[in-house]
Structures are given as C-alpha cells and as structure tokens.
Length: 302
Image (cartoon, rainbow, N blue to C red; front, side, top):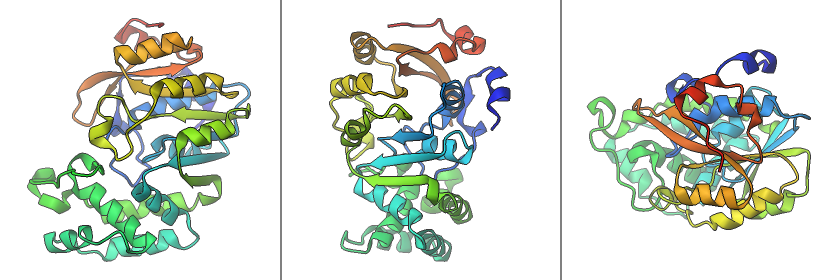
C-alpha cells in the first residue's frame, strides 16, 4: 500500500466485500469496513508510529491489515476471551499454524462430526480448543461465540451447518498470518490493563474497538466494560489513537466530556445495508479532505 497514492483517493461508503479479508474469524461487529479509514489515518500520522496496539483484538482485521500492508513494523494484539486467545496462540506458535491447517483440512464437516467436536470439554489441549473455536465461529449464527449462541439452521444457500466452513480459505489465511509471526505479538489478557502499561509510550498508536454498550452483551463473552474509564485512559495516551464506536447519544456525550472529536462515517454491511458508526480521536483533520464522506452526512463535532 503506497501512502502517497492512497491519500489522494476519496473514501467512499465502504462495502465490506471490497476489502481484503485477512482474519480466519467471522466476527460479529467486525471492522473490515474500517480498513480504508485506518490506512488514511496511519499514513497521515507524523511521525509514523512503528507499532500499533489493538487492546480488544477479536478477529483483529485492523491489526492484520496494517502488518500485511506494511503500515507499521509490528502490532500487539490483546484479547481476553480464552477461546479466541487459543486460536491466536496456536497460529503464532512455531508449528501451531501448520498443525491447525492440517486439522482443518482433514476435518469432515458432517453434522455428527460437528456436534461431536462442539461437545468436547474444555480439558482438551490448547490446540484442540483453537480448532473447536474456529469451528464454532463458522457454524454458529453470525459467527457469535458468546454462550448460548445458536447454530446455523439453513445456512448459506440452504447448505446447512457446514455452509460457512471453507477449509482452503481458512488454511490460506492462517498460513499467511504465520508467515508474519515475527511482527505480531499476542497477549491473552485484559485490554485496559495493557493500555495502562503502555500509556506513556509516545511512539505507538492505538486502535480501540471495545465491545459496544448496546449489542456487546449479546455478541461477546466479555462484554462488561467501564466506557467512561476507557475514554479517560484514551485521553491520557501519549501516542495517537483511533476509536470506533456505535453512534449513540451516550458515546457522543463521553467524547464531548473528554474533549475528543467524533465523526459519523458511512459503511455498507455484507447485506448492503447503509449505516453509520462513530470514529473518535483527539482530532480528525486527516479526514477533512474526504469530500465523499462529507457529502454523505454533515460533519459532527461533539
């Protein structure tokens, strides 16, 4: 990705189908739509940070994109969910990715086999837990991993449980991530704690995508978060940060209270539905030249 050329391009209403998919996860609330904005943001930072920290990584499409496109030298991904963490740890182990790929390619996704894997207990190995998590992510509705999530019924094109199980695609993405393991550090832990530990480092950037206050409880196992504390901590970070949030009155109020700028930006989801989400930072001048976004909706400063 050439920053000079990219900065001249307008930012359209982003269709997630147009953005390269790097993550093996189907993640509810995924940020594939945000990738063009992250490119613009990082390319206009001076000096350009060498490191990006993603404290609420999940599927980590942002962290993976900036590594794949050489927008930063390295990323630090943090995730609290133990099952999701098992996938990241396995993918980044020296021989873990190859083991996971072989397990995926050898698996026959019949209903009986799927149910047998999902019924396994948490006492299985970390690698088996990683495989089970990826399988659950592919056979549960919307990719939701929270407790109580239901399985697909009809599935994609009526093909049932296995309709979103794409072994070759999963294998390719996992191996591509493994090739860049020396530039990716994963921490299984609390994102807020890791932010505090790095708050005084001016040479790193932060991308913050916390569980949303509204839908988070339905979508994620660890959805409880003190949003006011997060805003307070973000305001104290020595380095630049970009936050993405649901466009809700309470979030706008928090941004205003902490002296931050919030902009609604348009996107289209996989169902081609047009919607807006908020981007929040100390300042959003890097977005000012984007006439396309300004035409979609007047700029909000809160």
